[in-house]
Length: 399
Image (cartoon, rainbow, N blue to C red):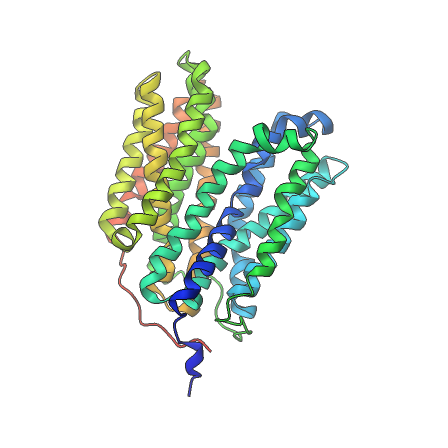
């Protein structure tokens, strides 16, 4: 007979500290990655990086988000989601802080890859932890909370590194990386404060993606739609505005583009219980994301910025809707496996589709072709949203 304490929901009083921990862990899904762009010029000057290697400071961790999802799934299956999340945060800190100590280019790239691996392992661990810590009717809100942290992390990392943190640290990019990284160790330790789910080893259970589950590929490809549009338009915004003769608007464009993700996460904190698990919400936000992307290359000036901001807002909502699917529809033992499979597919596409678009734009000399490549992919996978089965599967007992 199962121990009733293993399945007893946490009392209401414990929800706030759990929410805080989820939010803080979510912040570190993005801060280590997005502090690189503002620091890249300083790193590049000191270590004499080429433009390709400077860009790799951001793109290499994104690639690792796809590659590292499988080690995360394996760890969840062997040591449980809480231990996996703590281990992943430790790996992330070693890589992220290590970038501030490296002597040369090779070790910088190696540290960036280790950091990306840690973040990638965190991704499936968070949704796998939700059923262990939260009641079923709080799962959607839990997803919205840590995704709010993630999207806030995007804005915090990109927005306050140069104007606030770096001047306090004598304009040292090395000290700035250490200052952003080391506090995550405290969060990793705090993960053991909630008494529920001691994260005991769960034995040998399946951890590889279940390709027979249609959600693995469908949700993954739709995650690729959201990710390729956000990362792609972010990457090519400067080229697009320069081609329009509006390069002077780049700073404003990037500000509104990135803060829209924050608004998306705030909207979902309010609407998660209503929208999460609804196929219509996924379809509508995917359509609006495509329309916004088309508007960004059809219009000029401020209309381009407004269209791109619409896309960022709706793509952020779509991301949360999709990431919330695994804990909502699968048993707690299968959540990490499904999440890892969808992240593997999604971030592979989020990396490769914009890269393919960039090659096409280089060939034709027209930055719009990079964006059109992303739109073409999005239109091709959009019909998958109409076929999603988001009914809750019967849960299995967790020991």
